[in-house]
Every structure is written in C-alpha cells, then in structure tokens.
Image (cartoon, rainbow over all chains, first blue to last red):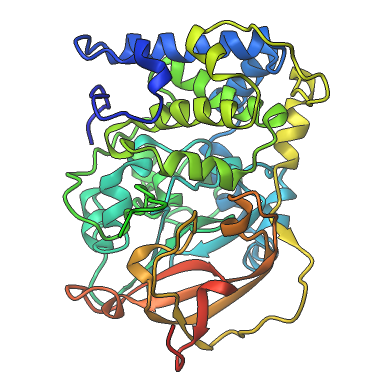
Length: 226
Length: 224
C-alpha cells in the first residue's frame, strides 16, 4: 500500500484546494500542516483541550500497550482459575488486572492449542483490543493483511515465520462488531517454575494476534535446563 | 444503476494489495502528526456527538480510501465529521481560523477526565427487546444483497451458510446507528464458516468467523 501522497482523486473536500499539493509530494509536510490546522481551529473554538491531547497521546505511547496483554497471558499460564475465568468472561477477568475500557469493552480470549491456531483480523477497518495490546501496528491496519488473513491465513502466518501444520485447524476471527479478540499463545516448554513476570517477557504482541508464537527461553537468553 | 453508498474498506478476500510489510517494532506512531490525529479524533468526539459507527462510515466512504495511509484516513474523516456535526463551518475549516461562536452546551473532554473516559469506553451491549432468534449450533444464511448504507457484514460472507458459535447478547446495531436512526439494539452472534464454503481455492481445515447482527441472518433453509 502506498503512503498516500497522491491526492489527485480526492474529491470529497473541494473547499480544501489549498491542501492539494499536486506538485508537492512532501506528504509529511502536508499532513503536518493539515492536522495542525485542525488542532488550532478546534482549540481556538474551545472544543478541544490541548492538555487532553497530550494526555491521550501519552496514554497510548507509554501506558497502554502489549505488556498489558502479556500480563494477562502469563497469569492464564500459571493460574487455572484465572484461565477458566478468561474463557468464561474475558472482559471481567482482564478487568481484574486493571485493563479495560475503550476498544476492549467486550473481550473474548481464544487459546492456541495443538489442534487449533487462531488468527485475529478486522477486514472492515482496524478493530483491535487497545487495553491489552495498545494501538495496532501499521501492517494490521493495511489492505494486504486485511484482505489475505481470511483467505490465506496459513500463508499469512508463514510470512511472519509461523508454520501451521496441515492437520492443525486455522481459525480466523474477523472482528466485525465491538467484540475484541485476544489470542492466548501456548506456554513454551522449559518454563516450569517461572514467575508470572518472567513468563510475561516471553509473550509478544504478535503472539497475541496469532501471527507469532511465544518466545522460547533461549530467545531471552535463558537455556532450557538439561 | 446509480451508485449509492459505497464502502471502500470491505477488503476481506480481495486481491491485488501487495505484500504485508510486517514491521516488528511497537511504536504506535511514525510521525508526530499521527499521534495528534488520533488524539484529536478521540477528543473531538465529546463535543462532536457522533458515534463510532458514524466515524467508521465517514472513513470507509472516502473515495481515495485505499490511497491514503491509516492516519490520513482518520484526519480527512475527522475534517468531514467536524463540519457535518457542526463543530466548525466549511468556511472556518477552509480558512483555518475560528470566526463563529462556540456552542457552550457541547461537552469538552478535559485532561483530568481522560483516564476516566478511556476506562469507561463505550460499551455496545444493551437490554434485548425480545428473545434471540438463533441458538448455538443453528445453521444460518447471511444476507445476500448489498445495502445502501453503512453495514458490518463483509462481502466475502454474503449469502453464505455458517453456524452460530456464540450468542453475545443484544448490541447497538451499526446500520441504523451510523445513519443517525438510533441504536436499535439487536442480537449479536459469532457465525463460523468453513473456508471451503467461502473460497474456491480454500485449503481444508480452515474456518473463519464474523460477528453478525440478527438482521444479517436467516435460517439456512430460507433464501433472501
């Protein structure tokens, strides 16, 4: 997918001819100016509090991200009661760890098993469980992933380095409503006795979407005991 | 036939979009303006009064949707929303300066309320108006034809037979909510399809589900 510097066929806002830089392909500059203009206008009118913008940005840049989901997964690995709660009522179980709210109001957790490999996509837009994974990566929101994940999921996960055997079912969840899906990866071997905090280090964002697996102990510099 | 409502965002199963560019970094923004675009969209929703289905509708109908990056889509759609919902006039947007008075009755999201607002979110579940028509295990056929408004039934499952896997309760119906016709809550189901019932070239041992509202579904034996 291109980076959208070609606005020639943009007919929706004829009032905005000053934003059309047909000769100027400096996309960054154009969008900088355009977003700043909107910010200034809404602030001037008193509809937007600049301090609220800073707070929102800081929240999603530093406070809400995949470490939250990793905490959920690690707890599910060590605590059978929590795992059962997660399967029965993921919104409440995740909420008990302090994660919830916007774009995570209705959570469902789906477990990777030896029989089933789950993969999450939003073919219609970019639905993603913000409270546990943060904001989605660019590829998740892009046309190549959204178009192919439902049609060739095995090929898609292979491109991320995950081989799903033919006898393992590929199960794709297209997030078309306000339900948000969190994949619970399988616990890696060689992690007996690890604490939740140590286990959480093995849980990647990609493993909670279904395009990755949890890391092996050797990936974090710990050898399996012999 | 004249084209009515057209979504450019219904991409499931379509081809020709190139390869997946999987960057493994976790930085949510690649330019500072992207962060501002996200924050502006979230903050302006309070005084703007639009709902999430109106936002999605504004984005998916941008004629050059596929040529725009994600936050370009958000920005252009936000420009559209702030005008349509009366926060700013076309004139003000074109000039980039405020010239009309503020409507003081509109709520503003202040910094101190951000954590509370994000934690509250916008739950979509509602009290059902009546019993669910379908139960887990029922075979259902999805709506076959196109509709002339925002909808959340992807084209790749239209007119196909699947099974009810889960009943989520009654949720806000996006088709009416996006049009300003009210929430009209209706039952929401997870409907799972065998991939071989969706694609000629599907491999075996593959299933795909969507979450579908009751008006999108009929018993498998009935036709639309």
